[in-house]
Length: 470
Image 1 (spheres, rainbow, N blue to C red):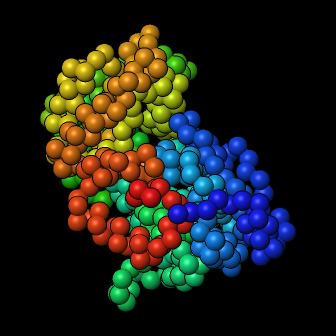
Image 2 (image 1 turned 90 degrees about the vertical axis):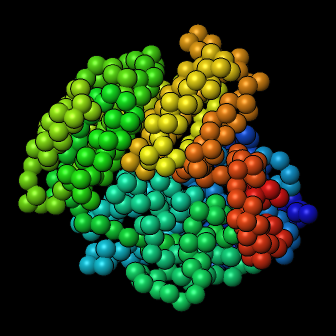
Image 3 (image 1 turned 90 degrees about the horizontal axis):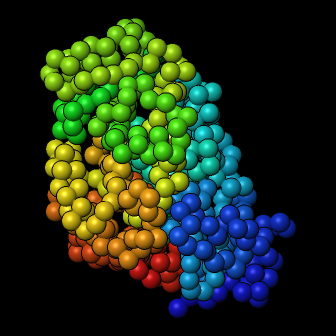
């Protein structure tokens, strides 16, 4: 049983820490983007050093007070706030945002966990390199949160998830001890890899305080195209064709459905479409080394091959940076339009690539049998990750469907499970999907996860109620 971070505990904590480390909780620490929960906090701790993080965690462990790690507050599954129970300490690393080292010759950047993702990208650029993790929230999310949730984003197809971009981490464990794993090694087979255990654990096994990040050479040229395709199946065949012609050079391959375009026309009409409103289209981006020709020529060849194969019916290739930004604006504006309309139920799912088209073909009729819905299907087709979001019929609001929210989610997730997919592709589990994990998770995996949690955090202070039921 956990205790609240009451006045007596806060006074004790204040004596352990430098002045100004603790503050009352502002609204931003207690809110989440979708407005589904309101968080609790006895106090917010903003340490400046690893030793101060350790002091906070050690005190909480001793007093049995919960800790909720807070990054940029951009998570979509409630992992960054506790809505009920004893008031926790909200632990923010926003003051720990230093660059600890830049090693361009090694393709490595060492940063503290509170650094905003866009700043990580800027430091990489300054070193003549690129850090390829790219998210819509990159101007506010922080790298510690990205690692804690194993964030995905737009470039997973080429560079992998956050897990694949991290060589080492420094973290404070639930007893307050410090794991000094901040190495820059590509190879290290010395026993269990605690780095990979803590990455994706959503703060339930410790607090990541710094990371050694993997950088890549900057592409010599970048090319972007928006192509109309006949169907999701055609999009997948086009992806295969692109990877065959441009092996290792396809950075992003995004699927966009017509409903997303209709939402843009309805809510953000200033975003213009250069090729009309097809049923399906893909946004593809390639990055080529210098000397490998003109990107537009490679994309033009792909378009012609796709046209000849009956996969593509129309398209536009960006001829300038402004045109490239305009094409990406279409993709980036779709989630904005979604928020304006308000989803009945949103789903961050993945299925094997070869079954994406089958999932889309089956999910629509199953939902239609339940009621009058609009479905906006879009996402990172290159890695099988779809944002399959269900919306009210035109002229109605999500309040009209509140009684169906759970049934809609179950309908989508049941089909995902049937096809061997995941109901949590890149946003994590947080507190939103704890029951889903219990319903769809492998029993052996769940037992191992609970055993690890009990071994590392026997008191249960680390992000209580997230990922695993408290």
